[in-house]
Image (cartoon, rainbow, N blue to C red; front, side):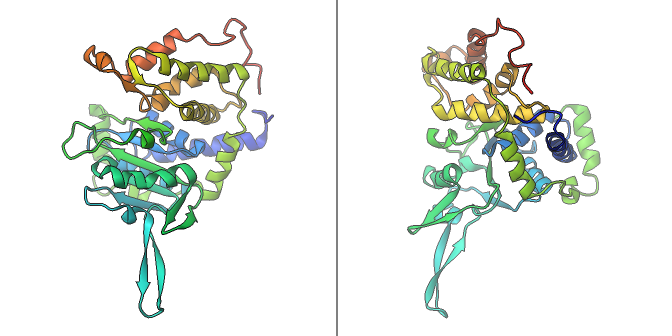
Length: 330
């Protein structure tokens, strides 16, 4: 197993910190959303960013792409957007006498699906194959997507006019859900100062590369996970299926997502093993969008956050009485 003393491992953690620091030049005063964005990148997962307009959802996606030097494309979702506008379409070339495939914007390394809940469910579902299998099939021909591949979708809260709730099947494809939130007054002044002449995103230089990002994803998968932590993850997810306040719990994909995200967070923190604290810290971001509250729970004022916190409080960490079982790793 890789040791934290290993020079390659230490180099990787330093490179990750460079990525975080570079993104933070643009996303001011929001270390948690930035860290979660990098968790998504390292995990090879997709990110859903839900918040009100103007708080930096789009800029977070652009800054991750610019920092890693990845190809970037943007899909502006609207009610009249068609599935072929996303995946691509074959167009007849009269001069050559054959059909030529015109790639859609989904064929890129980092794809910003902007305001995804403004598109119709049919168009939203066009993203499913790409997000799950890393490929698109158009007119019977399957094309692989480049690596690394990550969809960063933004959406406004569903109470905003002109929005369509994402289908549960698509929500489940997102590794984590991020909320950026408003800056405080000092941070807002700092944002104004930083954009007084031009936006800092325009000057952001890459500190990594697509090849290095793929390498970091491979290193993330090597992070050690004790059997007791695996049981803890499964116990939490199983509780979402039994909780009286939920009409739908998380699927096995939720367990795997919490597992992968915890590996990434451990790597960011400079550890070669997962602790229960990593799992607890990420539980809401990974599971909150995968659960559906019952009608009685909503009427009682419960939220996904309160339900997940309740589950964490009631779920015992397996083997917690045996201190030091994870700290001895690495």
